[in-house]
Image (cartoon, rainbow, N blue to C red; front, top):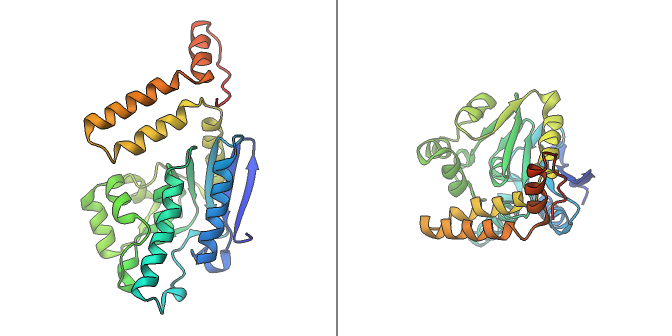
Length: 256
């Protein structure tokens, strides 16, 4: 799995798309290697947060367009289902996932970032759902995730025109959480992931509550959230947090 590297640092998984000579384009091999790394991370109890980034000058500059040249309808359907399955896996992982976006995040690369919980980018990052420029539409979930994140009107504009936006505009419209210098990107991502990784088990339940709410009517979403709120009290961390507060000391969370 040389196209995707995995580095574990003190309860944090750093997953790096490693195909810099192709700007980390999402070939079938890259997608499958990424999926294997993600499953490994999700299966480990010692990992509490993850970061996805790209090697070289790009996060992910898009799909591997050369491989799409002779697609049949069936090939395109299978590729879309494959990419959507992997990106949905990211969205539904137990732990929070941070996208550390360096450079280009176009097409499938932007869709990869959208599947993550939090997005931090370098000040030279560029974003776009550029599929329209080659006569197609986003295939890995941007048609659904982008409107939810930035609103339908702005999402339609970006998808219909294929316009590439800079980091400042991405932050202004809510596509990314924050913009930092290229030199500070990974340090800031690690710092945020470290803060999350030292938090309580309730963070994972909060992720479930937020994600599930999109698929439910308000009353059902509130009931699901209430159930998870109850489940929190089965965790050791909830007892530790409450006791630490009452005892006026810093809690020592274990993620359990």
